[in-house]
Image (tube, rainbow, N blue to C red):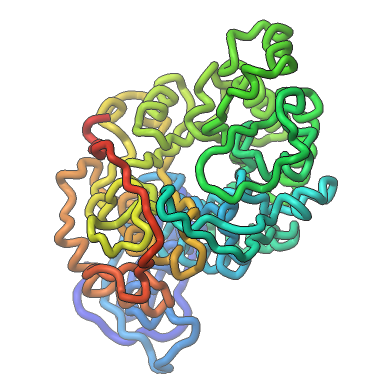
Length: 493
């Protein structure tokens, strides 16, 4: 800190000094002007975000409302991120999010110094990416006739309007380019071999045709996990190689997400074709059959200079070297993966699933999961105690918050679930002290009240107020589903 403040006009002087390290920066504001030194271009960009913060909430508007010089405090800020992967996952499969809304979230990530946007593009309830060689994936798989509202069996509430949409390849190229300008990487996810009912509805031959009339399947309208999974055949592998071939032309990033989660294997157990493949390959069962499919794509991607990342179920039956793991079930899979030498992105549902309810207030819209308050997210620690201080901790390459979209049917609902908790998560991912008990949540709350809620207002974010939901943010009559197991804290990992 240098003390004092004064009006600052003109363009900051920017340069790169690799000695600072990736994404690091030094920002100097003085009576002589503003100087930015970044360890790389990303570091320069993050320094500019800090400069926006110093200039007040109006710096986050799309056009200036005061045309005079900005008064800034005279300071020196030296900063660098704790983690290289600081992400948010948007599930655009269950509820489609328009391209402009995705671009808006790129801006919101950048404003919070988050650098990964993970797009969950396919699931049982919808397929959202254009694949030119397989047009029925979007002609059929991108649309469902109606949608369940909320959770639970009673009462059943339905939106009887068709729901759907998809991104053209040029839409996705635009998103990738827009994100790259803001130093945000876009990671695409094509889920397999489970969560594939929309794909099977479009191309029935992808399913287990020897045990299911796959021609009768439609895009799933209910939530939950579909029992209909991909068949473990060479034809299916070739089909998805075609999908990934087109995907790699759109997404230049190193990581490609293949899902791999919640693959129900009852069809494989009943399928003579699947059982024959297990015998042919000398596998130990259905888990190893899934591992064989995952391993195939790990090698296929590696041969093209890419890395596979998947949910922690991809550890079942063995995992190919070089593949990375996204840990969502407690910390167990992430700890096992790190100890086995795999890179890990920590995103446990018990801590940072933003579709989970934000308070125990019965007025919360469509309450689901465990309560994850703003303080809970602020105290989240990506490196569990069993890895902290060990050589394996280096494999925790980052952390991510996830928003599944069963009940976020509009941009306003997405905003409500994501913010302000994403602000707490961003601080954890960038700079928070490793020990949750050492973090000063009171100070964080004061900073939110003093400045950051005003920034979110300027950005037009329909966040959850600290006093609880506005009347128009509530969803009376739409049933929720709270988890009945106690929520495990981070230090039990």
